[in-house]
Image (cartoon, rainbow, N blue to C red):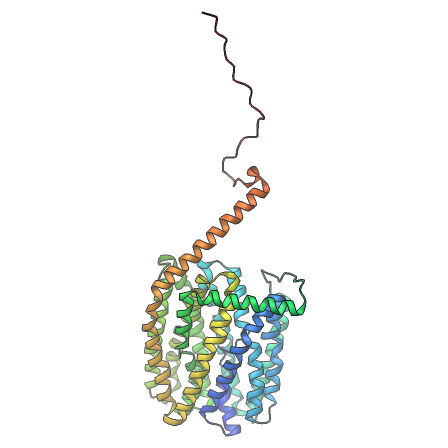
Length: 446
């Protein structure tokens, strides 16, 4: 249940807007509150995952925390809903960093683009299939409440499935520390980890690049845009969520395969090339979609499918970029900073900006500024990543190789030279003991 990629709130908002008399800025408020809360909550969940089993923490924050979504569905007014929805977002903020850390532990560098695509593609497919179904709730008086109830119950089921079926490749080691010592130790770990991350130039530039990314706004406001600017009903407009999700799925799967292949061909620059292409192409298609005026939803279906395909390129490029320059021990913290903090901050700011601009000048102009102009600028500016990424990824690869050699050497010294010799290599002969004195023939006297 990934609330950053889910279209549930987008689809249900028009129903809530009609029931409570809200404006477009209210959707920006909902998204912004959820993201700001997630900024604060992401790192504490990562710390809990360090101390306890990761699958248990993941089951709680991404599954059982859904009880707050159920409570939000019962809210009496908009303020109460926003508070409860924000509490729910505080739990979901921990899901992304923990899941991505587990994924990074499971797969080597050459396959991470593909499996990241499968992860995010699966999320998008579930959201895309469910969105039109939620859109059918528009015929009910409290349809938005039923939608959130279904969503919360789904979270609870997901929590149970994680506990039952998820295999964590790195279970937490027991820590014989008192509670105070554990807190102090974690604080030192976070401080040192943040300092190390800040020294990685590629990571700093990725944070800056994500800070100026307005692509996600299209997912949040796409259905509302079709309702307000093009006059479609909520049930009709929600249809575009499925082609967007299918396109996103295709983008993550195909993009993951292409990204891994380009990375193998150009390991020092391929991922940055893919990042730039996806952003510039997204800005171009978004411009066509926003400027198109039609009373047929069928014309918007292929446009949203292409937008979804290009949006699906983002996680399969961005996440492996971070994995390639950050040590495995710091990846969860890196994703907590980049995904749950910086991306959440940017998403919150641009959601608020789009909502208020939508009320002032219309959603069409607001989306043109945030999703088209900003994304195009970001795509061009991403060229600054080429040299730092080549340097930092090479440095991490060299460090990993040196660690592997030292580990193998220590293992060989513990086991002895015979056991340490690799299979197929020549092994020293057994020690024959002290050598006999050389035989010399005695010469006759002259």
